[in-house]
Image (cartoon, rainbow, N blue to C red; front, side):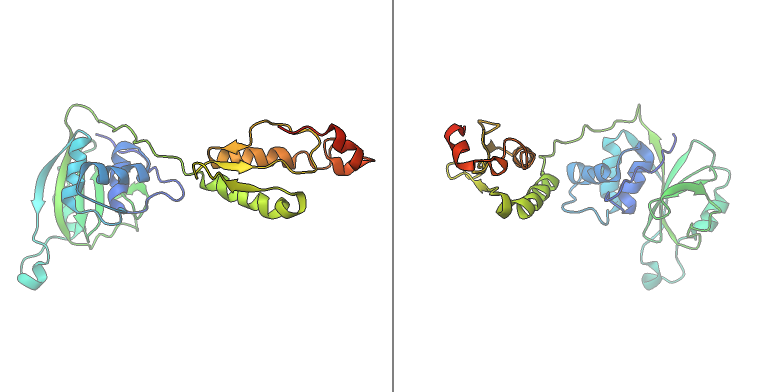
Length: 255
């Protein structure tokens, strides 16, 4: 079993649970975060993921987990004499088992991390590094250790369909309306019949309307209509540039 480079673009999930899945599959951390909501009882944004939900996701990916060490949590308040080893000690005591190709999922310091051979990976560091790297919290107490094994083959779930939001297009359309709307008679309003299509009217100064369709079913189409009329400003189709604007009204074309 091998590790992939962390796939975490800008504005993607930054937490350690989805990061571990990204190292194991090569998928975007935001897509990995969506698996918690699809395959476990996790709801809402994935900021902290308990180990049970993580193991449910691993099972759906075709990855088996073999428990190796379980140390009691909160043992300092229950029994101060019983506590898990530090990560450094666990690495040292399991040196013979840590061969390349064997991947271990470790919870230490309430943080998910992966170890294979002499390589270490976690979402906080954001890369595959040496176990001697300064970013490794070697004094963190280990609470759980599993060995991960691919059952038959790695199974990557199909991405769920996401309804486009057109937030960028909407923002651009509002910026154009603010810049050109009042000065150039550009308008955009909700249609009264269905309430979700939008009507972009032809400005009075346009001599020949370049389109016979003024309805946009989404913000992408609305933005296209606005840009089309803005492109006519100052051209021969702009009656404000005509020597006799009143005369040009006689041949004005509207749909």
